[in-house]
Amino acid sequence: MLGRVYFYLEQNTVREAEALMRDLRAHGVGVMTAPYTEESGEPWRTESCEAVRGAAAAGEAAGPAEEPEDALYITDDEEIYRVLQGQGFYVLPCRHAGNREADFAGAPYVIEQIEELGCGEIDMAYRRLAGLPWEILTTKRCIVRETTEEDADSFYRIYAEPEITGYMENLYADREEELAYLREYREKVYAFYGYGMWTVLLKDGTVIGRAGISWREGYDVPELGFVIGVPWQRQGYAYEVCTAILGYAAGELGMTQVQALVMKGNEKSLALCIKLGFRETGEVRDGGCDYVRLVRHAPQKGGTAAAGQVELQNFDKISK
Image (cartoon, rainbow, N blue to C red):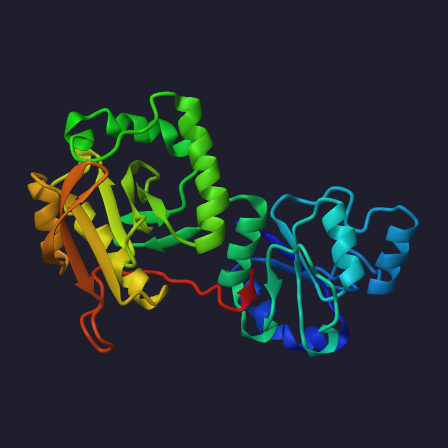
């Protein structure tokens, strides 16, 4: 979790960032501005932006000597951005009317409208820069977050059940290949799309399956996928999590249609999809397997809300 944010901003931009600073503090995140002062009133640094640039020119560290890993810097100064990034800090450049010509080329993300951001978006950007998983949503009993390599052992236990692999592709037999796949998926799919297949956990941290939204080659409609481990089946987890994900797909990702391809003979998954509001559109053959194809249209505004309490976050004002 993000613990501290340092703002290296010009004075007019500091005023625009005041709402963000208040929200960060409200969520327990430490906030420092140049010249930096802790909430306790104790000074952390007294350097202005000019002093930081001077220290960098002299070959001195721009940030503190022992910076915690849960810290993020935000700056609208091109030179300071380069210095902090070069010294290994997590940095978000900020673009506004006064610095449209600043060169932040190569920055993974750039703040565009700082006055409209909150703690949630900043934490998401920090997690992406630090290589930490996003928590996508929560339901009454579960957490859905991005998958990490640490989930692999749990996946192998889940996929060891013949009931699971009878209707879906298995994991790589070589664990190192699976880990490489998970790393590449995080770096290329999550970072590019912002969504994909995620890990499903109970709120005590137990991994019980996977679910999410992805794209299948040859189709122009996104696809819902899900698998819940045998010990947790018949307890409503799949319905709870998939309902929340479909609500997220419609409300957060703007997806008006989602498909599901259920292998013929998989009556449990077929029944779940119908319960979720999918309707059969026919049969298709894909990758040498026969599937029932179902499509679900997102409810119109004002329709039935998704089951469970879903926490959503926006990432619109930080551009890639």
